[in-house]
Structures are given as structure tokens and as C-alpha cells.
Amino acid sequence: DAAPDTKMLLISDQQAKEIADTETAQGGFAVAEMLPERDLRLQAGDRAMLLHCLQDPSNLGAILRTAEALGTDGLYLYQCCDLYNPKVIRGSMGAIFRAPIRRIRDTDAFFAHCRSAGVPVCAAVVDRDAVLLGQYDFSRGGVVLIGNEGNGLPREVSDRCDVKLTIPMSPASNSLNAAMAAGLFLWEMAKT
Image (cartoon, rainbow, N blue to C red; front, side, top):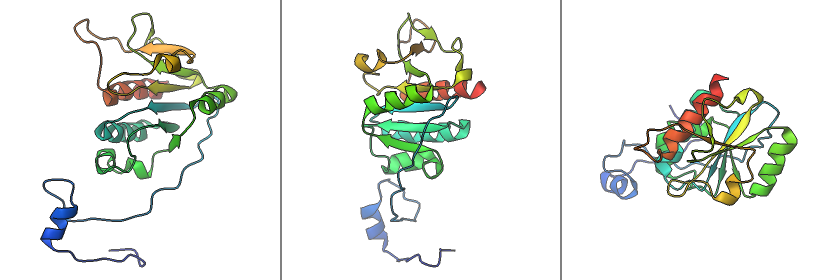
């Protein structure tokens, strides 16, 4: 059943093929307004994540889904791929409509906001000198910054963080997929 003010159109199979972005479309298409920006203000004890320049829509969708499932207080996006990319929407399994998401345009203002709220800022890095995930105490909350798939966080960003955290890995491996790494950090924050 459609909402009373919903306009529905029947289209041909050929039209559906032309607008579909997958090989086998599910048969339903929609045009909707974008969600309004949320006013997410961090408070002491909050657990959140900032995604810095993520480019893969599948990763962003998976992170949205995981963030909602694990109950994050905020998911901030800085210069990431399009939040409304069909792969993001599909991968999020609807979390895009429920999770606390906000795009930010200024990392300086974001760092200042975190500090004024008393929320520690943590850089997710691949660095043997960083604190191992699992040894850091998230009971005071924290915002974990995840860098992009190819380069991670820029040094000028990670150096501004209060602490650098790393995921313990086998010596044969040097990194994880951004969505997997984000999931591990979100899980660790949710445990405390």
C-alpha cells in the first residue's frame, strides 16, 4: 500500500532496464527527497566515528549498517562518496534512513567540537607503535577516525588525534578493508 500522496507510474520492461543500475533489478524504483541534515552534537561519553574521504560506496553502505546495528551515537562523513549512491543505499539495508549520520565540511571545526564536548579523538592507523585495539578504554567515549581505502588517514589528520589505535594483525597482513576495520572499532566501542 502506498502513502496517500504517493504518485505511482507503471513503466515498461525496457524503461526499467534503462534506469536500473543492476543486472537484475527487483522491479521497484523510487524518487524521493534527500534526508535533511541532522544536527548531531557530541556529548561527553558519546561513541562515534568519522569516515575521512571514503570512496567505495559498498564500504560506506556496510559501515552504515554496522554502525546502526552496534548503536553508535553518530557517524560523520568528510569528503566521502555520495551518500545517496545506490550501492550505499542497498548496502546499508535501510540504515541510511535511521542511523545518526551527518556530513561535515570542516575538520578543524569538528576537532574543536569534539574537544569542547570532552570526547577523545582516536585515529585508526596501521602503526606498530600505536595502542592496540582492545587495550584502549572507550568508557569515556571517543570518536574513531577511519581513513580512505587506498591511503588511510593523512598524517596531518592522525597527528591531531588524542591517540592512535591499531588493529592487531598477523605479520603477513598489512591492512584490512575499511568496512571491516570500522566494524571492529564500532564493536570495541559498543562493548564498553
